[in-house]
Amino acid sequence: MKVIRVTTPGTLVIDEDPIPVIEASDDVLIQVKAAGICGSDISIYRGTSPVATYPRVIGHEFAGIVTEVGSDVSDLAAGDHVTVNPVCNCGTCRVCKKGRGNVCANLQVIGVHRDGGYREYVKVPRKNVFKISADMPWEKAAIIEPYTVAAQVTSRGGVEEGDIVLVCGSGQIAPTILQVCNILGAKCIMTDLVEDRLTRAKEFGAWETICTKGMSTDEIVAKVKDLTDGIGADVAIDAACVGVTLEQAAKAVRSAGVVVTMGFHDKQAQITEFNITSRELDIRGSRLNNNKFPQVIEWVNAGKLEPTKIVTDTFHFTDIEKALTKLKDDPENTMKVILTF
Figure 1 (cartoon, helix red, strand yellow):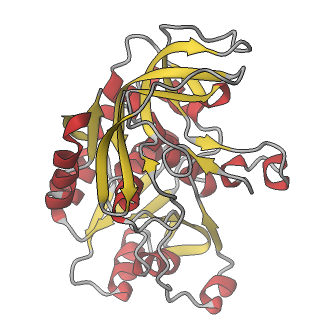
Figure 2: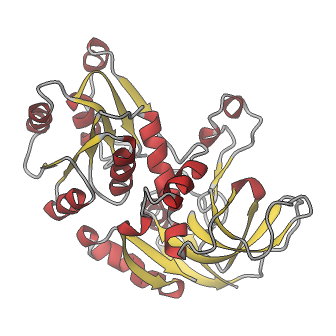
Figure 3: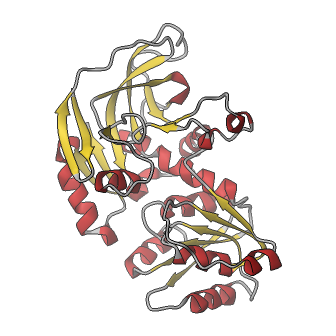
């Protein structure tokens, strides 16, 4: 079978590997049909990921058809259509026992720490596999995972009906957050440096948008306050993750508000203890997803979410270099790129 492997940062090859063999009793072998390209896949390729190891078959957003199962798997069979949760946890550490398996002390992520879905066949544990309708398009099934990330970040933010949510940055993940906020009955203020992204955010249901190009943090905060009767957003989500956006989020949220950050950027943000303590802010991280696949699949089945709305380009997986070039050269007009198998 063919696999897309990053051998070292900046070096990507299409290799030939043997098809995985069922070994463990809970193994599920899947023929991959479609996969999404995420910003973290690109960071592994570029060598900017702080957590990836090499060489690595990348890809953590994917779906396909079950071809074989281990002896203890009785609820899946060959021919079933499935999508895969890339989060692998031990289930026994203190963190897992606290119900926070997405930040397990022994966490491994498929496509990051374990070989991922950019290959024709992949073997994963049964607990990571979720059955989907046989009539769900593969492009839709492949990108359920980003919506679980959005469900996680809104959960960490405690987003509720009637909330005003500030989303800093309107890049790849932001439209999924916006759509989940809409389902929850919250209103989103979306920010970005690029007007075209904000136009798209409006099309996706943003309540208000702010083009931050040329604006200082104080000006951005003032604009958010203008839109919220001087109070500030109930929840602020840093979806751009470039340091200054975390500062913007912390200053634009109301007293007793929640700030959620998603990134791994190591640039220090200018956030003071006074700003946090005097207004009793909650600052929270959000990583991957914590058992959000059933909820997102339910939303998709009910027609509340349409994942393919974020798909802008589709390539055969052997054209991975063309797909990466498109993302690099045309970021303003490119949201989700799908690889087909």
